[in-house]
Length: 495
Length: 95
Image (cartoon, rainbow over all chains, first blue to last red; front, side, top):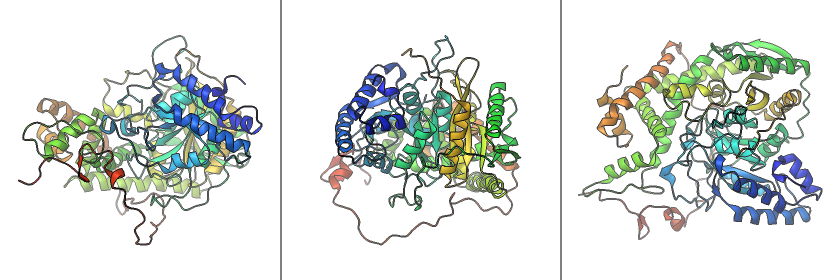
């Protein structure tokens, strides 16, 4: 078999089990593809020795007929996951040289399921960003281009390296994390599938924390089926994360019937934003028509507090970040600034954090500090948490009215050029998350599925939002959408 | 609510991030942009609404009050920028 790296998880799994290829061959194909893709800057720490050792072990298990769900499948791991003995920097200078002495639960679950780790993937610093431009490693680059125009485009963020790597077939799939849209926006920008499960589905233990009440891990894959396979391997109850749900994990792949006849799909009117590009508008209408043709009932719904989701997010997420990132003090791990004569411990903290954190992280930590400070806590933080209650209530209401899932655009535009937003104010960048951030605030599962292309050939995606804990049902609806859309385009290789 | 340079300096101090005085005007401007955006929240009627503490209704589970790990001094100190004699070392704190 040739071009083994172009396979998805399901295809490779089936080929492995049929004895048509080996994990070693798959892994070598991916490592070769990675070596030739330096221009994408997707993989930032390479672990070929670990990969080959895991591949050999997987081949032995396959031979013995003891092959778990991800056995022998080579994947990339976002730099946010702590991987034992392997650099895990969260895209930040402040964690330069940090070698975790433990393994995150999600990566351990994947290894237990037989997965092979090719390396660590680029991302925005501490997952704060929507374009992968805040990374200490430099920009990850989208394998997609605007036709013949060679402008370098963003793969989105914060899981930009994961999205670029999957879209460019450097790996079969990758892990991502999503605090406000960091799986779904990059998936939409690269023509890949990304699901953020219900809050609590995946353990957060060993994942570098950004905003603990919003962070969730999820898979980034080449198809909905692959997302089902990998999500099942990633999730499950973990006593080490007190917010991890003690619920059985369904067989997500078995639930992929794609039968949505009689299902009620909600179309929220508040997501029809002023100034929404016509192409996004059309993509959405096409998606609605596809779901209708597949037998679903389309229902107009209202989520009245949608408008306040982004401002609430930009209070809650920085507040939690300022608290979580207080641990980077130059004492226990990571970077410590060089000190001048007479500098005490306060100077050490202040210089370490000024040198170690990039501008966007500093900005958010300070905004968080401000909204939590005496005199402003009620006006900002408590108010935002009340608005969050209302946002969640909006969703509970429509689900109580019988809506099965909600269809929206995933992003307000196609991938934009790297550097295009540099001079814009920070709020303009935040608007990238306008369709995704509500889902994190309400703790719901959401999936981005590629369903079309813009005039210049760039991929565009739609988002489906499901009821809490009903990822199986959500994936099946996404499978129906994927089948109807028939998105098969791939970027032309230029790298 | 407008943030001036002295407020920006105070916030930087609280966050333990060193900001050069010449960077304060731009920082204050960034803060004002973001806080202006956040200000929309004041339009929402939140009378009688409970602030969210947990997005899922689950209760945190209790666990037995027993030691489950330990003896990890080497692992704990492994990544320290300065570790001496089994401790983290920092600049002198007490005169």
